[in-house]
Image (cartoon, rainbow, N blue to C red; front, top):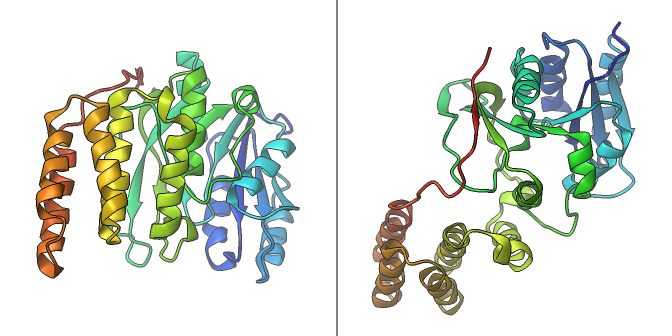
Length: 310
C-alpha cells in the first residue's frame, strides 16, 4: 500500500448510501495510487457509515469522518482540515471520477505550474447512463462550478479560507471567484469525471439558487469584470421574473443593462419592460426570448491557459 499522499479527494455526503458506493469505487480504480479519499458524513441517518467502513476494510486509503456542523460547505471545509496531500480534489457523492482523473490532472498541474486545474466532464442520465453532454473548453470567465472536476493545491485553498458556509447555494462558484482573484485557473482539455444530475437538490431549489446568486454579487460583484457581472445580474433577473417578482426582476435587468455596454442586455431590459405583464403562455415565450437574448453574446472575458493530456 502506498503511504505517500499526493492527492486528497474530499467527498461530503448525507443519506446517500445508495449512491456513494459508485463514487468510492471510482476513486479506488484510479491509475494514480498516491491518494486518500476523505468522506465527510454530514449527519446521515441511513447506512452510509457501515457502507463506507466496508470499503475501508478493503482499502485504508478510504477514510470516514463525521462532520460536527451542517451543510455541504461546512463538510468540505472540515475535510480540508483533515487532508495530508499536496493537492485537493473534490468528488460529490453522486458523481464519479474516471480512472485516469488524478493522473491526468496532476500531469496538467505539474506541467503548467498551476495551483488550480479545471478539467472537462460528462453529464449522464443515472438510470440509463446515456450521455447528455460533454463539457470541455467552454469556460470564458473568472468563475467556474462543479468541484468534481477541480484539482487545487492545498495551500491555495487554505489561503482563501475554503468555502463560505453562509451561502445557501453557489458555494463552489463563490469560492472559484476568490480563488480566481489569487490565480487564474487553467483549462485542462480532458474529460475526467461524470456528473449525474440528482433531483430535489436543496441548493438547486429556485429560492436557494437565487439567494446564492444575490449573495455572490453582493460579496464579489464589484471585483468581477463588468461583462461577467452583467451576466449574473441578467440571470438573477430571469430567476425573479420566472417567480413573478416583476419589480425585483426589473431591478436586476436594469443593473445588467447599466453594467455593460452590450446591446444584448439593453435589448433584454427593454423587451422585459414591454412584455412583463403578459400572462400564461406568453410569459413562457417571453422567458425563452429573454434567455435567448442573454445567450446571444458571451465573449471571452478571461483568457485561460489550455493544457492538453499527455
